[in-house]
Image 1 (cartoon, rainbow, N blue to C red):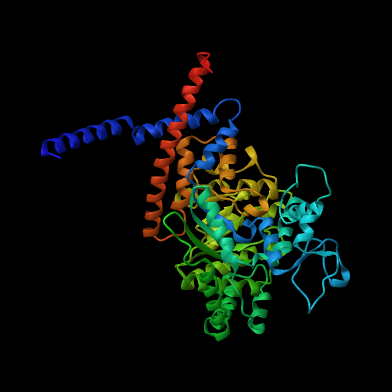
Image 2 (cartoon, rainbow, N blue to C red):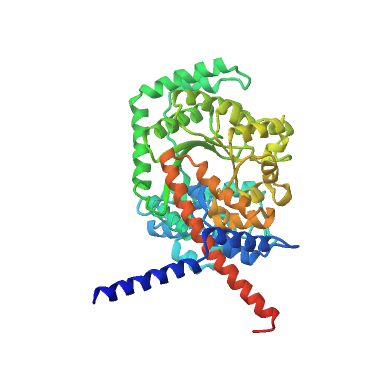
Length: 509
């Protein structure tokens, strides 16, 4: 090709590229079109739920910051896993085998011969009625869409975990890979999950001192008892080995799953309904483990907050966090607090849980936070949360099922009005039979935030993630790119919808 021809072709290509660029809407135009289209979907007498469902599935989600691994695997997966192990599920309670209906039998021949009432996977799948019963007992499926004998919703929710519990420790890496695939399919880039509880190490004499603490013990007395146990745990070879093994187990299951589109981090935790010494031994291990591994990014406390022990020892637990934060200042805390409503507990138990989690324990994020409007000095507490940038992890489906709090009764509106940041999360998507897209759909249809507020909420899930500054910058840049792509796609959908509306108006099919 002659030089003149090459130059001419290059010029034509450049002109075409400039014309194509000029035809392509700029990011600002895509943003404006997305704002307008989304606004149309949420305005009017009722939101356009089906179209919003499409949009929320496509929406970049950022991260899920309040997430329990065992409660996020669907019951169907757990059944598949017990099938691989050759385990069975009891179709009827069997006192002779010390077994309850719907529970898993992990003992197998020749050591134990399960009775005929314990069905293996193939038999369960052939018995469609029992199969559906298992799904309904291992999750919230079918709980509220037909009449049947039922326990209170909160009891049903927490009762699911012992039923599928033996299966939850199986094939953990496979489960995490499944959750990763689900996250990527929903355009979510970051997951912070509670994988397994931290191990404790007993010292009967020192444990007895903690267990004997009265509810009104002053902080100095509490710290003295905790210090003795902490010093033992820090020097005991067995305790150190258990913590090391715990960290290695988590790294084996969760390590190496990050890629350019997805990042996984782990919170460790203890149950709040155990003896005080057991809670503290586990918390010490949780803090020490967190300090050892970059995969572990925070510590939490779980379990029904309305349990007798949880209520009795609540302030003691917060002091345990305060004590351990002094020894492990780099450890970050997101605490379940205020997952309570009036009637579930006496009014006295609603007055200070969120405040104590923040002011005593030093929580940087609050999980649930439903009890905020019953707290003493709630207006001052809300202002403190705003000033200190302490977000609330909002779990819309979970709060509706467990506590019966939804729609205009949910304090999400209170937090927003007072400028407290919120993040949208799933809690236990396997038990609740939901996903992160569903939570955003509920957020948009029930509370109709503006597009800018919706976008800010998504960004909060990265801004308040327990990541170091460099990792957070990377995640925010990824989220920027995802929103540019989402808004370009949404603008095309909006333009196509406008053309179709124009044709209908003109009487053209």
